[in-house]
Length: 217
Image 1 (cartoon, rainbow, N blue to C red):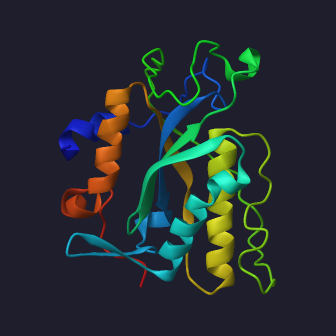
Image 2: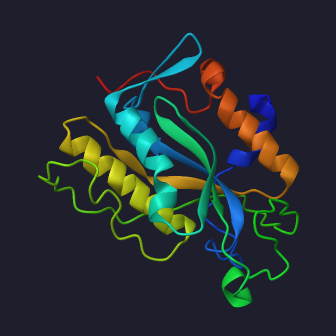
């Protein structure tokens, strides 16, 4: 899928879908950028992403999200030099209609044509955990903290904090920007189009809207 066709997914709005609970079942396209778009996560070489140590941490901890957040599944995911793209799927059992918001939504079904937000992309200001780096010797312990309710904000917030904590603890420079971008995926066609965009991102880096010169050195 071409970059041009997908750019309308990236209009920036400060208003979320006020009637939509971001803890409800659904598939969500997530983008998180590094502070000042610095290349903390590695570089693109021959259309392939070569991960730095911080990039490996970002990749590893994303794939551990389902182990720390109940009823969360992962779609396609990619780490880029200065940002990550991924699909988060909240898939709770259909035993609590009030919690899910849409009692006709079938678990595991990605058809979400009823979601018409008008504000596909929103920004979130997240409270960051303390910048103190743990002295624990095992980098695999206590990775995700302050998990709280299973919402997109809580999932992304705990992921961001975990990546920063462990990258810094191991001596690898890294800092996220405070905002992140989310897009409610509205249909199976949108899901496939976004998946294709994520998978092809490294080979289209030269024309990527997030591309910057490397400022991390």
